[in-house]
Length: 58
Image (cartoon, rainbow, N blue to C red; front, top):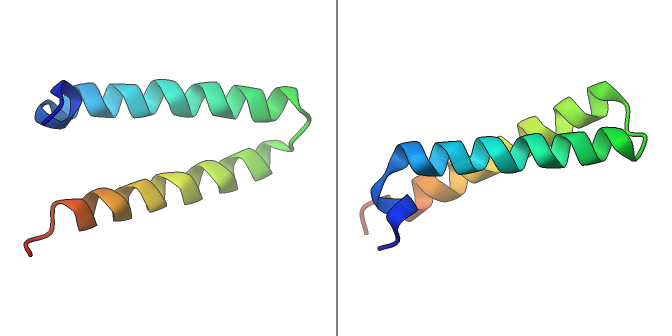
């Protein structure tokens, strides 16, 4: 188990930093603000799904 897996706050902070970076890059490349929100929301939902599956009992 990695350090970020054992500390949910560190994982949440890492997701926050990466998300902000990608959102800024999308804006700099001309994506409309609404499009950035849609993409970010979809990515966060997918991440939540993956993490839930990862921690689901077998």
